[in-house]
Length: 189
Image (cartoon, rainbow, N blue to C red; front, side, top):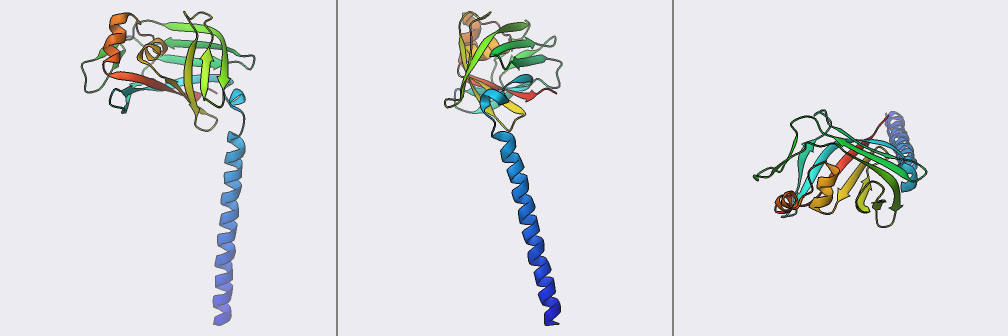
């Protein structure tokens, strides 16, 4: 009887050890996948999934679902430092901030291109003026290799990235409830 318990106990311990090694192996695979430099990870085409706004009280709210609406939102980054951006909203779309009276029509296609640079330490992405009126600096964050969030630190930049009018009245309206926002992208296959 004791011998049987010993074998059962040994099998249990060996099973736990095998499970632990398997978990370590998976963790090592995950780490290997995400240890590439940001300059390598950003290269490719990214499709927009959602837009969130950071309110004046510091709360982040989802304000636009890009994946199910027919909107086309795309960032493409080349290994040579070039980029292209496109936002083509579906008909009748608006940037609506929940629990406010703010709703801004998204009725124009926006596209721009040029060159970009990354600052890995600061997690910033600078887009050259190219077809923009001036350079634009955005924050960025990766979630693994296949998800990228681009962070707009002010309402004007957020409006630029979603194709909304950037006239003073629209900026003031959005700035009354929003301090910035983010767009989440998924790597395109």
